[in-house]
Amino acid sequence: MEKKTKIHAEDDRLDLVITREFDLPVELLFKAHTESEIVAQWMGTKVLKLESKKYGGWEYETSDPNGNVVFKANGVFHDFVPNEKIVRTFEMDNVNFAPQLEFLQFEKLTDDTSKLTMQIIYKSIEHRMTQLKLPFAQGLNMAHNRLEEIVTKLK
Image 1 (cartoon, rainbow, N blue to C red):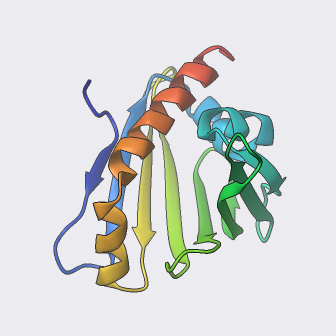
Image 2 (cartoon, rainbow, N blue to C red):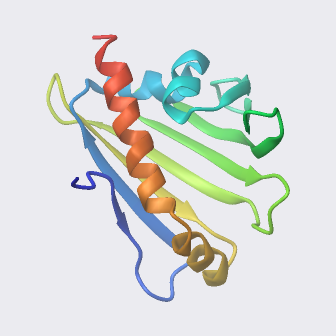
């Protein structure tokens, strides 16, 4: 299966750029990142908090079948322009990763298609390289596939 989500990681840089085109209007793509019910579905996580506004916070948590928390992350929205951009921090609990700064740009391509460009900035090249060694690209592509599948039903 083709990976539609592309990750561009240049050597010796603190950032990486992720791009994905969706068969969704930009308004629905943005909604998929800002409404807790939709985020929970495509990310497969519990949304504990999602204040979709400038200076709002967010917090997600995923548990295994026994109720043990296996993933917990949080952050703050630093900029928020509906259907255009989100700037946020991303921090995972109980892992040895420093917080990241993420710039999400939402672009209308046609009335029915859109593009998401994410630039993620890491504290160090080592942190970025560690994340890239994980099944990060495959997981992100799968999540974006679910996003498109779920949100297409909202059209």
